[in-house]
Length: 340
Image (tube, rainbow, N blue to C red; front, side, top):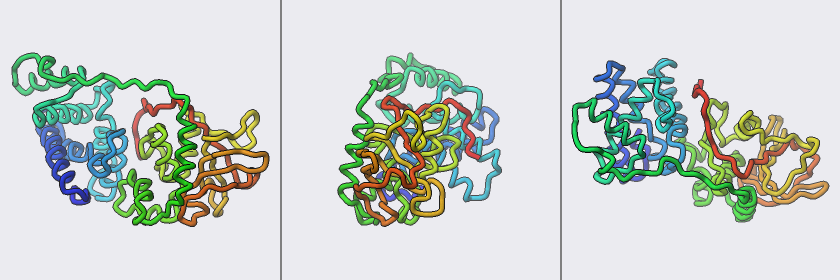
């Protein structure tokens, strides 16, 4: 698994950190009377996505999605065992949950690894309390850790931002205008593909990267999402994921074409229906301008021809609807994670 990480330095860092968390997880499982193997596997995979991609946001959801494929493809685990491991990974930063022993073991193991691995350890106040309880459980006594730690902010609060959709359009216009070519040798295309941990991602996205282009632009504009919304059918590398996500009760961002009271505008995301194939919702782009009969769009993989472009499309032809993301939208998930 670690050999799939190309950078030798990152591979070494991953080995030290992931094996450390895995060892602590196994130790805690043994002490608390739980399955050591499942705990060790969860510890080993809990931050794999970061070491694979270098992307720090959403370590739980993104590593769970990456681990889901790994566990599935081994064929060695029951669905119940997979769910135990994946939930432990998914909820690793959720301190509001404390009833699952495996989820708690991963949180505890991460805290122990950070404490013992680093001489300058940054922990939140909540994690300091967790560490004090852990060290007491393990028989270590000492001074108050609050004086020894550099306390991290409990929560980074984002300010309201009414400029994100404008930035979305501006960035899409800039990138699409560069006529990015969907080949591994194009570094701009590499940036679009970097979010997806598949070893064969260039093959997976060949002539099919319009949704990945939208995901990339959204991230650059400040609309941050995990690679797959929890419990969703698709990843955001596919158009179906955008349609599914935009119609959730917690979003409600989707507007059907010619919906009463809605007029598309710059910064909206347009979803096409049977535009390039016989399949529903088969293409996606970003609106730059609107006229009575046409929309100016920025698209990755224009017409499945494997390059980005800015051009006009007929407003009355094969448009399913539009996604208008709220400028202040922030990803939050408080439901029960079940990827099966």
